Structure formats: structure tokens, C-alpha cells
Length: 228
Image (cartoon, rainbow, N blue to C red):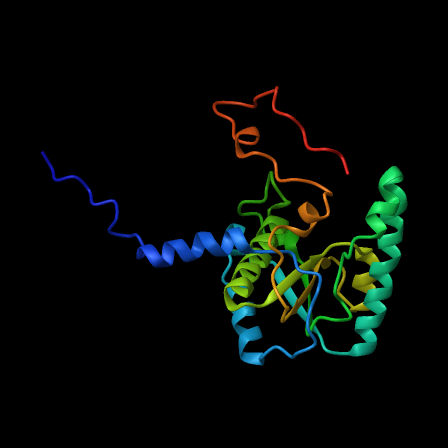
């Protein structure tokens, strides 16, 4: 009988494994920033982490636009604020509650990076023939990589998705077919929220794990999240 395989031979040291789980648990969507600048080398490391994300068919559909022009940042803020108000109206009875939430830090964060889908994505068929949205999934992986790296570095990051993508694409002179996915606010913070901000403000709660894990098929009785 062959010797049993040592399942730990590819495992990282315990401290490294614990650090990975800790950064996942303590990652926060930050909205409050200090004005201190971010070291360019640190920003470079965050972009490196994003660029080393997995992508379907190795298509690497992400593009990163660093916003260094203050006037451009202010025009972006105007777009976000317009959509913020439209979102509030669409929420009906929760409009006032939503308007009290801080949903972005565009004017305060040291760095603003727009993450976009590249143009020409239709030529990538590998992994996308029946699931063309996998380009978006790949970009989301890049953002998550950057988010976790930022938290490990002690840098706050907030993902802003409240904007008109067509208007932002025009503002940033994106080519036809390219599409903005996220505005990332990045910078130093006084402290990280002890819990997700929307939990703190009682907007929503994390669903229990057992309600989202099924076996051998969809469990029809699983509760659905509220439509907000």
C-alpha cells in the first residue's frame, strides 16, 4: 500500500494562512478618508495585485484609469451625486434613510481609480461562449485582489458603483465597447469600521452561511434577500 499523501505539503505556514482569513474578515468598504497622500510605490503594489487576478481565458479585460485631475474628479462627483439622488427616489420608503448614508469618498480620498472593461471583448470566446458576463466576473476578481491587498497594507478602499456608466465613459473618453465598472476611492483612514458600514447603520445584515449553501440542487425553501 502506498504511503498516504501529505496534504500539508503545499500549505502555507499557519501564520500566513491566518493572515489571509483575517484580511478577508476585516476588509471594509470605506467611505471616510484622511487627506494624506498614498505612497506611489504602495499604489503600484495594489495595481500589481489587481493585475494578477484570475481571468477567464486569460483575457485580462481590466483597465485602470488613475484620476489625478481635481476638476475631473469633481465632475465625476457630480455624476455620482446625481445617481445617488436617483437611487434614493427609486428606493421609495427608504429614500430618506438612504440619503443619510455616506456612499462615496471621491473628494476626500488620496487616490481615485476607475476600473473598466476593455473594448474588443467580443473576440474572446474561451470561457465566454455561453457566459459572456465572465469578463465582468474577471474584473470583479481584480478589484477584490486590490481590496484585500489594500486592507493588508492598512489602506482604505471604497467601491463606488453609483454612477451612469455611459456618462462616465464619455467623461473619460473611453473607446466604443469599453465600460466603467467601478470608481475606487483609495486612501489612508483613521480606523477601519468594526463591522460593514451598512450593518452598522442597520441597512442590511449578512445572510447566514447555511442559507446560501445548497447540495445537489437548488433548495427552494432558502430565504431570498430583500429587494433593495
